[in-house]
Length: 116
Figure (cartoon, rainbow, N blue to C red):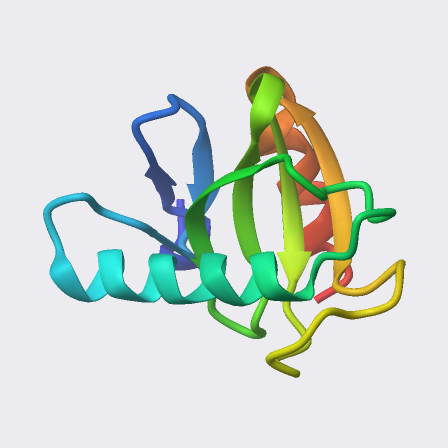
């Protein structure tokens, strides 16, 4: 297995490639970054957006972009891309790629990564 293929895993129990930085509850920098991105996403998501009222937590950060892995209510996950406008956006922004339940995350993230 190459360094690029080495896996990260988070407390949710799924594995991600080394292209992801998994948010850690033991790392203040990670906590601050996750909370800041979550706050930005909450500002941006309008009532008609799929994720409105569903964001729970930023789980991981992608190395090559501003995309983040988020946990949604109901046990689903998604990749979200904040616009960094600091204001409410018009649907469909911020962009979101829904991954599904925890069991589908590793497979769906790997498929999503193929575009990078």
